[in-house]
Image 1 (tube, rainbow, N blue to C red):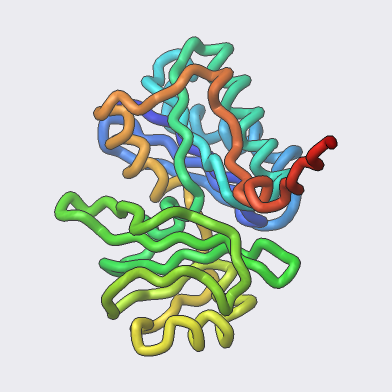
Image 2 (image 1 turned 135 degrees about the horizontal axis):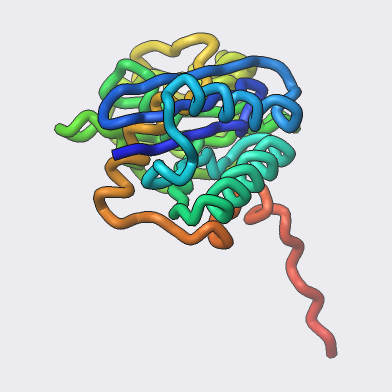
Length: 225
């Protein structure tokens, strides 16, 4: 199976390609995703010796994350997939983050600004893939929903920024937390491969970002009397 993955959901930009089990990847930090992402993809495919049309699917980080970064990632995935006639695999950025952490249970948190975090809890299954425990959300660090049980590992930029509040909230359920952990396209490939095998792909026009914050920012409609 041949899959290209890209993630621009945070300040860390990464691309990776899996060619029949062999994985190559490239990454950069900073806020130049719009300038650099296509160059990274082109260089990576050249290194792998494949063209877009020789791939089976394109995966991208659907969010949550930076609004601008998510739009860039979705737009690039759509454009590449349209041009090559490929299906797309939208992958949760929180799940990608958790997949890249060497721990059986992960409390993934990305900095959402405004003193909030994007939050998701994940357990690793017997196949080594993380699965969500509950729904992803955006919340204040002191109100994030906690899964049952203990021995959880925290990871992500949300922990870097709000570790004191999150650790206090998790209490004895928290085993440890890892600094400077980001969603990475290499980890995304593992989830994307399983999704393709399960037939969980979408057409390019359905490859849209998931912001989460929109779900809580909508004001109630006024009732007309």
